Amino acid sequence: MRTLSIFPLLTFFILSVLQGAIASGADASDTKVATSSSEDDNDAGSNGVITLTSRNFDSSIKDGSVWLIEFHSPWCGHCKRFAQTYSEVAEYIHKQNKDGQRKVMVAKIDGSKEKALTSRFSVKGYPSFFLLDGWDVYEFNQARSKKAMIEFATNKGKGKESVSFFMGPFGPFGQLRALMMNTGTTILDVYDHIVENYFLSPTLVAVLMAGVGVFFGTIFVIIVGLFMLPKPKAD
Image 1 (cartoon, rainbow, N blue to C red):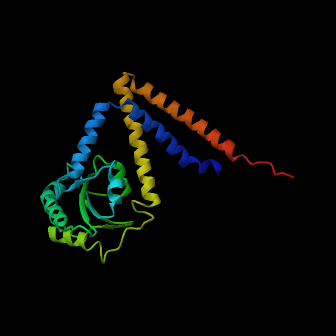
Image 2: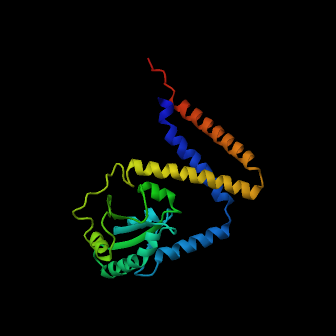
Image 3: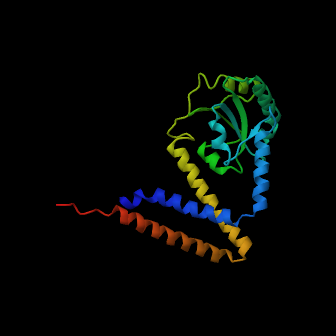
């Protein structure tokens, strides 16, 4: 039973090691370009749709605003047809925001790239729309139109039932889904990075990664186990 209790900690540890390997092997210029692009997308003009990614999502929604968020995908025909209308929704809502009052921000997330965020919100199809009001999350389930979307956002989900916190993106199950997705994608990124940059065979890389995972996992389990050993009672 004690062994089972340390599996989440072990997952976090291995994930951190893998992410470190990616970061150390990444090209600095690519990182600079990606960061600059992300900042440009996030600005999106004063009235445009804001682009959110896994890098800026949590920091952005902490600004105290209400957030209307669309999960979309480049291959989704419905998303393409609604794109112009959604831009008009963003322009209208952002123009209504006034200083000194709580703002409503309109954003979008590319679900085909941001798998962890898609998992956190349990997105089952595109486009999907969610309203974030603090810890409360509301899903848009009406027919898509400019009027309906504006009312949904400006009324802050009034009259709608919020998503269960326990199963929602900020609850334990949402965070667990994101962790599992992050773990899987990070492992694949490390695998691709090693194969492409070190010219090793895919089979050898897979064996090496498995060995490294087992080695560090075993060390971690041993260390945690030593700390959990029962201590003799003093007489």
